[in-house]
Image (cartoon, rainbow, N blue to C red; front, side):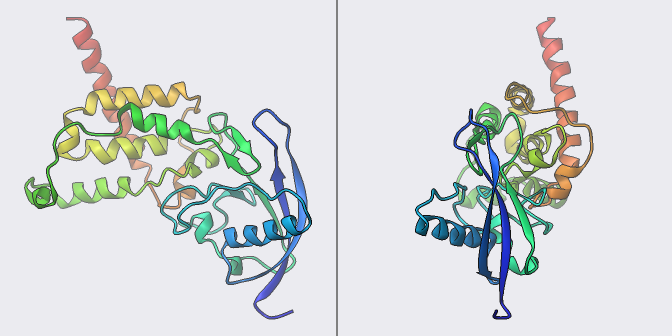
Length: 257
């Protein structure tokens, strides 16, 4: 065997649909260590097609670590063993010859399995639709420097905005909580002046929608931050909690007038 080739045993979750039972299938592949994890799955599917078997359904898009589509649990960890790395950017050189790899979909009530390794993450879209936007006119590119914003505030807003909505935080959380995702979207807008006009209603709407989708409660385990491929900070949850408490107080006060 060439030095850059390895043989692997794959335990891949197969499930025909949302209401069907699933199970692990065992497959063997021989691949090049320069491949990405998704390229390895492409090789597996080529083998299955040649054997006239149904290929494994998995989700992908950009394969550049920025779209969040490649939502897999690899050996029990969302996106696999490398910190700060999406599945599509995970390379096979991080695995050993002869290793057994377990590949599963995200496990969460709010992320039902569509087929095999593909889950329905549209709950995130509905959270965004409930309030993850601004209605003010932000102007064009030349207006970018018209409003003075402190460097530290701009930095914190940008860091929150790097969330790609992959759902790794939900998959890592023992409660399947979406607090890290939702708080990143709330912080991204509430920290900037353009987002303050609707800040109170935004956080109320987004948290309500998050709860309605069936995500669990946050118990401050911290696994979400540890497994997030973009390193979204738990500080955003504290920001969202502060925003939510303040908005709830104002809402009750207005209701009692």
